[in-house]
Every structure is written in structure tokens, then in C-alpha cells.
Length: 296
Length: 235
Image 1 (spheres, rainbow over the protein chains, first blue to last red):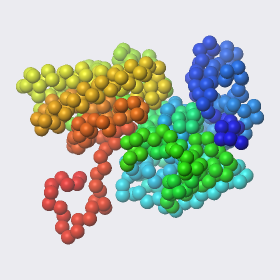
Image 2 (cartoon, one colour):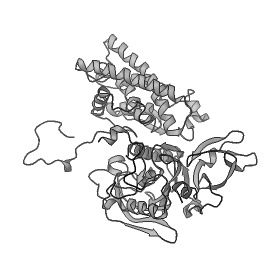
Image 3 (cartoon, helix red, strand yellow):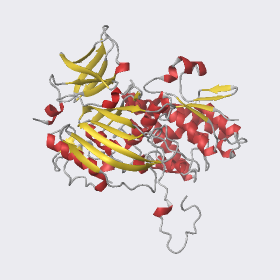
């Protein structure tokens, strides 16, 4: 099975449910290199079309999901989405010129917090990534990182002081990642933050951040802005990574101990043949490399 | 006298006001407005505050401003600040500054629009926008190069003015529009020096896409037997 066919088996986010245009208005976008149109009919039903095909649709986690396959793999479960007292915050979409897999991998990384999200998610000299655990959950076929701890000056919009934040990361499918982190205002629950990635093509993606939080004080605007601020700090880094695709050969980008989650993610992608947006062969010519960066 | 700033963290125009306030050490009240995806700046509630339907909005007890040049001018005049930000007695310097405040509008309508498109897929004529952005960068590069011949680090002289604050964000953010379309800073050495000069100002703050220069922290410095004698070698 080639990389594209493998990728076609999954569900992908293509819009926020509260902003799907009503027919005859349509939202035009692309998925896995294919042009698609989406709109809501008068009866409320949402239609996704590619050329003359009607694709399956699913409404979940405040987003519209679709798949090029008529028999896609099951969409992953986020049980916290049923907890009615959480505040659900879809944050819009941000386009990034990088492989969808690079966007997911960046989301899983903590070591960059003090340098990219300075004085928010991390700060110097608190740069050490303490040992943590990574497993592949064979039942769910997910990558899981647990016991991740990091000092954060402002872990969330609702945090006023620095705290040691506990993280759990889940990668339930190649282009989606979910994290659970200490809720600054409550001891008994964890905040949930996810990125749902829409692969435009192998080197471009639209990222839909989504949160399910316990926060009684912040306005919606403040919560969305906080997440957008964090993600836009990542964006300029992501757009300058070379090669644009994610290399799966460990000789191409040499990992350290802090990159355990990334190592597991790359291996897991390779094992399941999820190679859309990946660079498998180290001799394959990297594309999309800007000269200036490649020269560094 | 203070003010309320209706603000959006990702906006280069809003950042001008946050940056200048930080440099001047002014405290103000900040209200986050959901520019995207909610378009809250065009909501009934926000239009009642400012019918322009734009961000930022600077509001005082007796005035509402929606244009950033007016805000920068008001801030420079109203707070006890070094006079170089708005040279009170130098009419020709003031005229030069006003030129650049106008030019800052061109930067917003080219690079600013191109960046919004790159982030959020807003509809634009991309070729025209990119061409306009390149022309704007070349103009400012040529000007800054000439300034450097006279030993000037900033747009209108040796000291920064509100013209530098107004032009800085969208020049610094131009790589956000896209790679390999002539909007990277690689080919603009004078712009890069000017960006360093602004980032070196006391009170400088970053925004997403505009990073602070790396400061050496105490734990990174090996003083050896004695502390360095050069003042300001690190903060």
C-alpha cells in the first residue's frame, strides 16, 4: 500500500462545526492533495464532496471530520468530550508550511518550551527534561507518554504563578495528538488540549487546535488567544525545519533522551506504514528546503 | 492618565501599542478581543466602542482612537518620555516621522494582509500583495542603508522615534507571509541591523513571529575569577 492509500483510511478535520457555510455557499479546502467542498444543506445535514464523490462525514469534538475512504478506521475516542462541565474551545485553523507529521511531533516535544514559549510554558534555567515513560498501547494502537513533568511559569490562561506541570500525551492516529495537563485551578482534574491536523498535502497542513478546560474565569477570547499565541510561536519554527517532511531514519535527525516520545512516534509511524508526509530513505532528496536555512 | 487597549495577541498593529507601552513603562488595562475565528471586533458590542471595526482600539476616559499612528503620537506626547520619540521642537524631524507613519500603512496593506492570508486563508490577490511587500522592504532597506552611512541606526536619526515603532512589526513579520518569495530577511542586511537595534531597546517585548534576542543568563556565564568590567555586557 502506498503512503497516500494508507493515509486515506483515516478521518480528518476539515472545519469547525459552528462555521460551516450553508448551501449554496461552500467552503473549499484540500485534503491529501484533493480538492473538497463542504456545506450545510437546508435540512442541517453537512455534505462533503470531491469531484462527483460524496464523502463520509462525522461531527465530533466541535469539528467536522471526513475521510476519502468509504470504510475508514474508527475515529479515536476523547472521553473528556462528554464531560459537560468542561469548556470546549475550538481555536480556529492555522496554516503551516510543514509536513502534518512535523506539526504533531512538535506538539509532543517539551524540550523547546523555555526557548520558544519563553516565560509561558518554560523558562531558563529550568530547561531540564526529567526522565519520563513512553509506551505503545497495543489495544488502542496509540503512542502514550506518561510521567512527563516540567516547570512552567504560566501553564495556562488561568495560571497566575509558576507550577510543576504534569503531562500525559496521546497520539491516537498519525495526524492527531492530545495532551492532558495539570489544571491550574483544580487538583482533581486535568485540562485537555489537542491538535487535529488536516493534511493539505505532504508539505502543508492546516492545524485545528482544540481544548476542553476547567476555567471559570477567562473569557473565550482570552482562552483562544492564549492557545493561538502558543501555536504561532511554534509556527515560525516549524516553517524553518529542513527537510519539510518528517525523517524516519534515526541517522537523519539524531534524537536525545528528551525526544523519547518523538522516537516512539516515528517508529510507530514507520511500523504501520503511515508515511504520508514522512521521509523514509535518507538518500531521498529533501524538498522544500530554503537555501538560507539549509546552509546553516 | 492611563488607557484601555482592546487587543489581539497575533496582530502586528496591536503589538505596536503593547511594544511602545512596554518601552515607555506605561501600565494599561488590556482586553483580549477574539479577532479570529470569532471576528469579535466586528460584533455589535465592539462596534459600539469603535465603529471602525478594527483592532487595536485605545480608549481613555474622554477619547477613542482606532488608528495606530494617532495612538503612538498620543502616547509619546502624554507620558513623561525621552523627547526623541517625538522631537517636540524639530518640525522637519516631525515631518519625516509622519512620512513613515504613512508608510507603515503600506506595510499593513501588503505584508500585513499577506500574513493574515498565510495564517488564516483570508482572500487576497497574493501576487499583488507579495509584489507590494517586496517593494516596501526594498524601500526601507535602501533608506536604512543611507541612514547607516551617516551613523544612524534608526529611520530618522540616531535615536528611535514612533516611526520605528510603527514600521517595525510588519517588516519583522514579513517571513511569515511565505518562504522564497523575496520576503525573507536574508537579502536585507540593513533591515536586519535595524531589527537588532529595536530588539536591543530597554523594555522590548516579543510577539509570536518576533523573538527576543537571546539574553545570556547568569548560569551560562563563566566569570572566572572576576566579573566582567564592561557595563551592560549582560542583563
